[in-house]
Length: 317
Image (cartoon, rainbow, N blue to C red; front, side, top):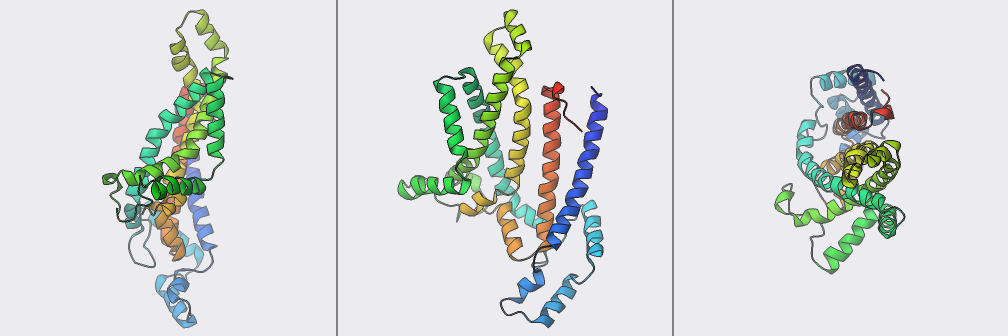
């Protein structure tokens, strides 16, 4: 096994390479988008001369490699660019949508970890019995329902029919924490699929760990059952769950576009949808880079957690 520091250095270098690849891929994909901000600003009856003048004013008539070089240089300085439509910095758009998205993400993760791990451990402890079958069937059934359909169902029942919760976040602005009732349905929808996948991963990992030789050895030495489960078996089951949790947090921070659109929450997903509709390429690029770098960082953290709890898993750099 390689020493921890060299492995961490190699993994960090790989992360830097992945970040550079994300930047290049984001620019290439946004360049391939049909139309641009000049066309969007021209309206339903575009004037070719007006479009050409707008492109020149926005710098869209410059060669792609020049625009990429300027954009990449700005990224190194922490400058994500300026909106072509409003003239505002892209960081201002991030600031607008950051709060609601991070609030939803934080609440979801805070509930996801104890719920997913608890259900997985419960199912593993009662493998093959009623509790295991109930948890496995429920998680499989809920996971099979798309977030949008599940959200519509919950809204219909608890907001429209029973009137217990508000159907959307309209009128609450970005200060959603002051209106907790508006967060209940979005958080439940966001939890629905991740908690199912996390619980099933923890269950499988716990069953495998409980059947391992080192757990059997601990039992032969008279180690109490609770200590065997939580001090010996659970750390081994957490390793694959950490990878799933990293992907889940990345998905949540990516804007949770469907849930934000369904409940009219002004988060990063809404900002991204509006930017795509307006062909505001710098905003799309800036958000995509932030999401991509977040993915790289979260997966690096998941690899570190996996190596810490299950070093024999051989996380590759």
